[in-house]
Image (cartoon, rainbow, N blue to C red; front, side, top):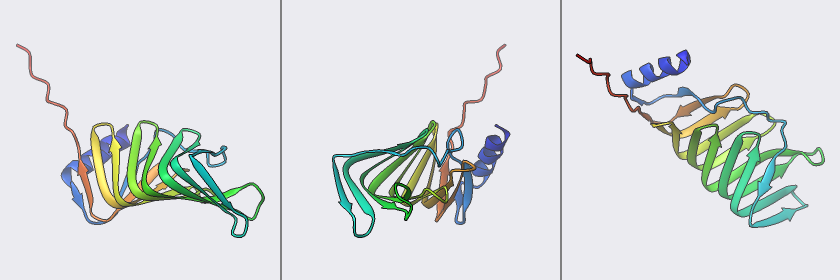
Length: 164
């Protein structure tokens, strides 16, 4: 709570930041070893390069994290049955807890525990919104770093009126 208040105070004082900005993302840390569930309209598998392409209303769920996109490329690791990374394109929505992020693309490095969103990133945290060109989410810590002309809009609660 104190970290969020300090972040809010910093963002009010500096609403436009040209360099990187760290923010909390998601209500809890993500278990990157949890099962990954993928649903989609279509699936194409390539045995030659160890990939699978899901297309049409793709939804990926892992623990409390949900990712949705029109198309997702799944790259399998050399270990049988393990996913190395997911590459979502065509407009992506990433939801964790009560926070959501949108971008043109998302790359999820499962082993590394990071999700990199790029292209017109919009992060909403309640009524507050942050925009940037890219955002890297560390799923082990629940922290995100936004970069590329970061802009923040914080909704202020009305001041309490003194009652006579």
